[in-house]
Amino acid sequence: MLISLVVPCYNEEAALPILYDALKEVRSSVPEHVFEFIFVNDGSRDKTSEVIKGFACEDPGVKYVIFSRNFGKEAAMYAGLEKAKGDYIAILDADMQDPPSLIPQMIKDLDSGEWDIVAARRVTRKGEPKIRSFFARKFYRIINRMCDVEIADGARDFRLMRKSVVDAILSVSERQRFSKGIFAWVGFRTKWIEHENVERAAGETKWSFWSLFRYAIDGIVSFTTAPLRISIYLGMGFACLGFAYLLYYFIRAIVLQIYNTVPGYPSLLSFILFIGGLILMCLGIIGEYIGKIYIESKRRPIYIASEESKDD
Ligand code: UDP
Ligand code: MG
Image (cartoon, rainbow, N blue to C red; front, side, top):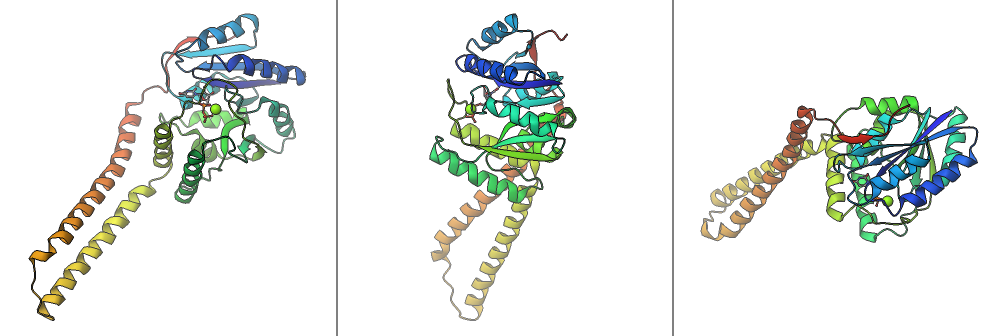
């Protein structure tokens, strides 16, 4: 059986040799299967391309796709999955945070016929900045409450899948991909295996706080239209509040005969500011969706490859 291991790489020259050694070890520990390693260089600015081509020179089991620029991990995973020919296909990070040593067990699980996907989940976020863990947890809470599909907290992109699952993932051809959501959306029988958080072997993470924040917004916006509903509720709520406020002043003027208009200035200003802010927020939410429609409607390719290893 052929097993494809897909590795998205962005500035990973330091980590790749360590990963490659680990992958070779996996390959020799499961001699009954044939392996192909697919490295996708996502427009790295360091020597990642040279390192990958170096592997490919001496090892016919190494395939690669080189992007013309950085298209993001989602695009890199898509390209790797498209190139993969295996009966079982895995995605794993280049930095050893997805322990390759789990792969033999994952293969056994798929062999048993009981599962279509074996996916890894971190049980701890040890070694990760506290603030990042906090926001990550909140994000999963919110997205799971709003969306129809369940996205597991701590789920990584690390998973071994049958070819049929990969075909289903590739058939979801939207340009702005949020893979965690797409994996959940396509379904199939998934076995979760848990592991401790592993720190990066070398190099550094590509995620800053703001890029994660954008990723979170993208994730929510691509899987649910619930935020649009929030703006309706908010609008309704504030319209009722405004009406109640008006009623209160009428009653005060007619029943209690109090006419002091000028002192109302600060409350009026604060209301205008508040409602103005709310309207801007709702417009922003709507804008997010319209932006998505705009980008999807251009139907651009998900990535552009400048170079690829020959298929045999
Ligand atoms: N990655 C990529 N393109 C990008 C950013 C990251 O292909 O634009 C790859 C990166 O090389 C690594 C994986 O995605 O193999 C996960 O990235 P990273 O380790 O920086 O993320 P973290 O583990 O901190 O979430
Ligand atoms: Mg990492």
